[in-house]
Amino acid sequence: MSQLKKLAGQTAIYGLSSILGRSINFLLIIVYTAYLDKAALGAFTGIYALIGFLNIVFTYGMETAFFRFSTRKNLDPAKVYHSSQSLLITSSLILGSGMYLLAPWLSEVMNYPDQAYLFRWTALILSFDAILAIPFAKLRLENRAIAFAGAKLINILFNVLFNLLLIIWIPGWIESGNLEQGFLGFQQDWGVEYILLSNLLANGLIIPFVWWRAGFFRFTLEKEIIKPMWKYSLPLLFMGLAGVTNELVSRLLFEYVLPVNYFPGVTSREAAGIFGANFKLAILMNLVIQAFKYAAEPFFFRQSTDKNSPQLYAKVMHAFILFCSLLMIAISVNLFWIGPLFLKGAAYATGFYIVPVLLMGYLLLGVYFNLSIWFKVTDKTSYSFWITFIGALVSVAIIVGLVPVWGFMGGALSTLGCYLVMTVICFGYGQKFYPIPYQTGKAILYLVLAFALSYGGFYLDLQSQEMNFFAKNTAVLIFLGLVVLLEKDQLNSLFSLKKKKA
Image 1 (cartoon, rainbow, N blue to C red):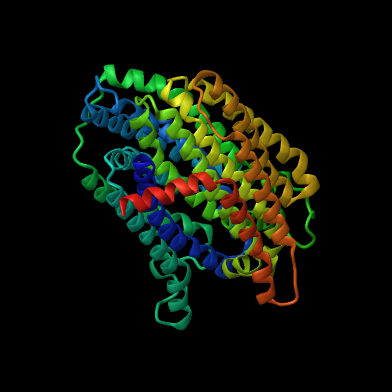
Image 2: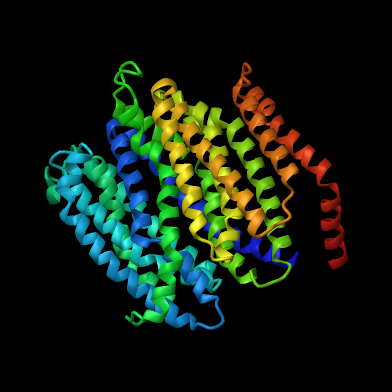
């Protein structure tokens, strides 16, 4: 119980910072939908899908390798830190330079003619992200959650301030006559350009602070450390590529596979903007999973040598499914007011119906992360590639097959389908190589019921907003009631333990 409480506490700190930070960042979608056109939102969706994909290439699984090798008793954690950080700096310079030179070609391939500067900025953003990966991982490994959270929040605040300055304030000052036209080369017709530029400036400014908080590092590449780390992380690179394909490919490919005039009066790029904006409504689930990963990954590795670790992993999984199922229902049934609050414009409401599917997809991604501990602690990381590669194939097949037929729902189902397949395969192999006593029957029951209640509440429609709110949220109470009924013994044990301590 104390270990679960420790993990919950760490997750709460990461979660608070992530939710606060992402909530601030999420408010930018209000700015984008209010001040930029749908084509700019489509460009934002496509380019950031590319950034998400290439982020994996630039870091190539070195974070997880850092956790694994820093917790080995025969290695000096400081040497692991110095070598892994030095390796990432070197590779970032090489990869970033290559992408910078290829920017004109990328701009043509992705249909952004004469905008090579977008991909030069993207190369710098990716390089900055990569050289921050190991210092952030070191803060997590050392349980310095507050330092980690503080750095992330500062970065997000910088990003938000630059977005507001470039998208709202400077154009307003120019329009009011307080600044001259062309101030500092300001371009009135830019949209996604200022989103990327804000990100670039924010990431560049945070580097010295993060390096200072993580501690001094010495540039060194020790072969006896780098070689086994590379062998361990290489399958994770391919796993990451396949995994990010699963997560982002629908947003990256959507505008290219959607038939022309599928949505009357809306271009394919504008439809991609609507699709990408609705992905943002599933952000709360993604935040919880991200916060959980920040806390759980180093926690899982530290506990891996304990003989009771399988039982602990099972308890963590069960608690995770309960919490995230409840969250999925709460978001889904309240989309009728959450959606319009954040996405300004009636066009975006046409995609609200896919959000419960996206929430379930993200939930299954979290389940997969829990399950994946077996190949990380047994050093069988090669399985990770094949599992995620199969998921990527499923994702692409669904996008190509269903987006031309079902539009937004086809893209959402690609997310759900690939994570469902990955979860099933990972569970099967995990129980073979590293058995963990998960409560599988209950987990399936909770997930199926949560999905049904989510859509039941979403489609329930009464005459007034007040009646809708109370009627729809009965789905939350139904789920809570079932949890109390089925988890009665565990809850009694928990509360009796608290009484004894009191």
